[in-house]
Length: 73
Image 1 (cartoon, rainbow, N blue to C red):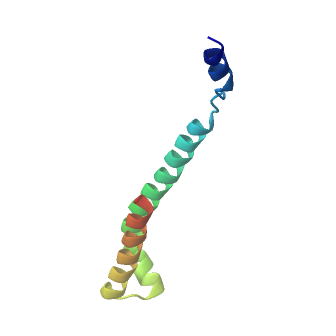
Image 2 (tube, rainbow, N blue to C red; image 1 turned 60 degrees about the horizontal axis):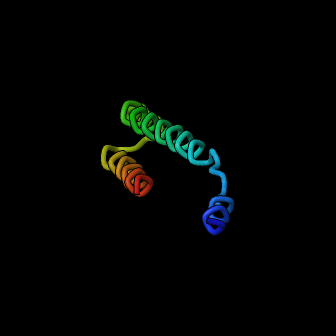
């Protein structure tokens, strides 16, 4: 019985770190989703301001998409 009480006393108390991790993941994912949505909407105006043709804008969207995929892994 003493080994059971020693095992119970050696168990560490859980922390709330897992909740903070979930909150941070939610915030980062929400920001990433919002950025992805606004980039597709503002893409035409952004192309005019920067002076990109449709092929160049395709490269920008492709680079963003690849970075998004890597971030999701």
